Length: 69
Image (cartoon, rainbow, N blue to C red; front, side, top):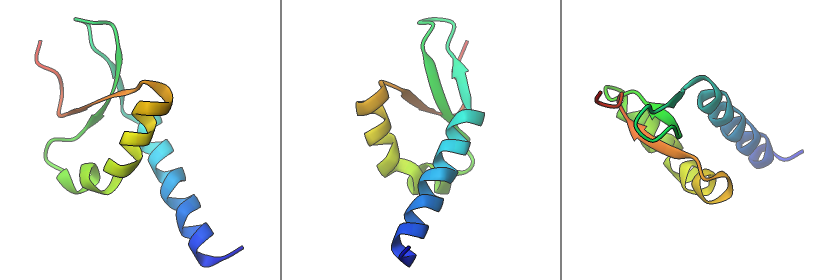
């Protein structure tokens, strides 16, 4: 297995772990969102390419910081 494939597997695996642990259902529209911490923009920027693919493939939605009530 090449180094590039290992790095890609780690990147995608870490994104999936983050996604699973940061899902919140918004009460207003009853839709699940992956919530990125507002004070950690580096995570948002790091995973942004995968969020585009995730949105197209699964319809998942994303939000920076918690939703306002």
